[in-house]
Picture 1 (cartoon, rainbow, N blue to C red):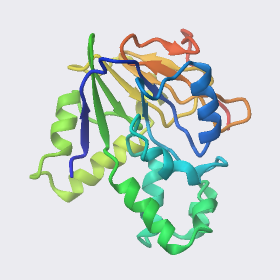
Picture 2: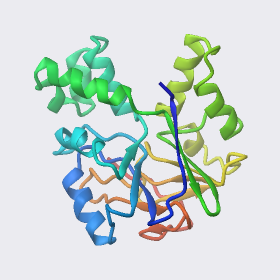
Picture 3: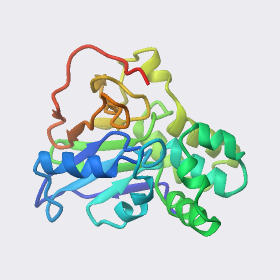
Picture 4: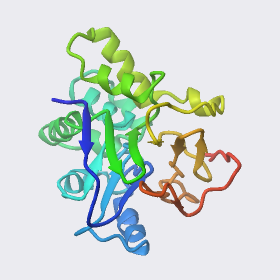
Length: 242
């Protein structure tokens, strides 16, 4: 399988990306209706973390079957894969929002894990204004092309691949140090993972997880053609408190 999925330009509608869903699929449906999302023409790209913590994690498989919905693998999908593989104790998974899955029958746990293991680590989307990259947490290479080529390089060692996956799904270094240098050879990179009060751009890296699963959180949508966010993006970085 390829760890990078590439999508051609949407010539009939709009392309949006949205922040971490965390089992808030019913809330997502409502907010999609509010922005006039048309599933016959538009596409929605997810930065990952489809499950855990929220009330509707069980709907993840239903959304992954929709022709207009596409997601990268987040660290919470990684947790589900590890748990089904026997590589995680239940208490740790529960502490990280996985109680819904711990209570599932074994065959359903495996079904979720298998679906999540098929998700790419990175997505590329063509637009009129250039290529957009999507990854859950960060691009751990100096350039986007270095990252995507390495993901699918059969000569990369297992240890190196694990390190790439770890950084792509778990790293918060870029936003913690407020690194504005950006990533060359791509118009923009869209990420989630770290909940913020408002979306923010650091260089050409757009952080759009605005904590929809939290009491005062909400979904941010970014139009991939224009890089405009709904709601609009402020200038200042504001951290969300869980």
